[in-house]
Image 1 (cartoon, helix red, strand yellow):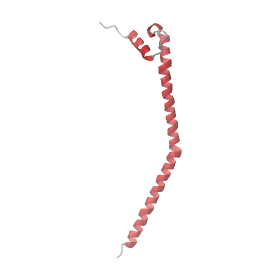
Image 2 (cartoon, helix red, strand yellow):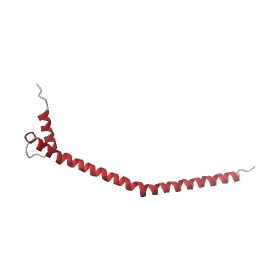
Image 3 (cartoon, helix red, strand yellow):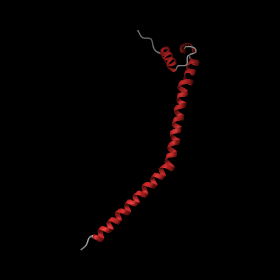
Image 4 (cartoon, one colour):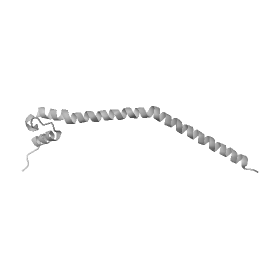
Amino acid sequence: MSFEPIVGECEQDVMETARLMLETARAMRTYTTTQVAPLLDQERAKAERSVQNMEQVLDVQMPAALQKAMPAACGQGTTDFANHASAACQQSAPATK
């Protein structure tokens, strides 16, 4: 009995499976680059805008609101958030002995 025909068929099967795997990998890469990557870019842009909005609130709007709410404690004319927060905390902290 000769194993050559069986070995030849096995090699063909292996090669066909390898081709199928490569085609599948190419299709997945194409799908990812054309369908998924643009969605990820959109989400990244949304996250960046959210960070910028949060920075705007913390750096500009929050100090202005604190100064408006507690003008004497916030030190007129300063816009530094840390100074505002410190003044607000000192104003509301309980007295210690």
